[in-house]
Image (tube, rainbow, N blue to C red; front, side, top):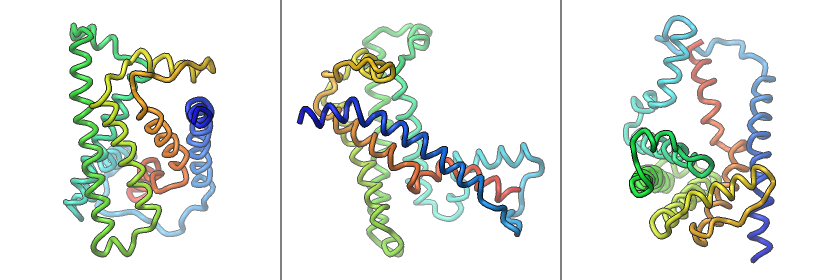
Amino acid sequence: MDIIAFIFYYITPYVAVIVFFGGIAYQLYRWSRKPPVAAHLSLYPRPQGHLARFIDAVIDMFTLKGLFKVNKALWLGGFVMHLGLLLILFGHIRAFADFYFLWDLLGWGEEQVHLFSGVAGTIAGILFTIPLFYLLARRWSGPVKWLSKPEDFALLFLLIGIGFTGFHMRLLTTVQVEELHHFFGGLALFNWQVPPASAGDSFIFHFALVQALMIYFPFSKLMHTIGTLFAKMVARS
């Protein structure tokens, strides 16, 4: 067990980061090498001007307004899940560098910061995790069931696992941010530090699942989060 923990704490994180960024770069290179489509793929009506089309594509990407017109239930589940994910990613910045300037601006002490972090983190986790069960149930019924692949279910279970291990650390332990700073700072500088003991045993499972997601990301349907802007620009070109 100690050897497995050592691998997930100090070896595979570097593999995950290399595969994540290298895989994304490789996919972008592949897309750039694709020959242009002979036919126009524009959707009408479209905004006039490059800037207007770019702004419209960005708004569509963040609001999913195109999906809202087609399937409102799916839009609600997808929008809430993506909103929760965005808040979680923003909140996880504290694992590397805290928002000291913001706490000083608000005049908050350690107790207020801890309370805000607990409430905001729990809300973000709920917004992210609950819609995953809706998306999973949707995959198990109706016409979508016959279009679903094992990859679709595996991805949802992976995200749910990340959500639940995160909930365990959030609700059943009191994670010390300073311990996270030392651990991840040590990884970044190749000066390895002990794992954050305050995060409990669930930390290694949460950390390992996130690494698996990073390795899987560039070669999965999740690349739509990067490719969607390019696709939307093509549709408005």
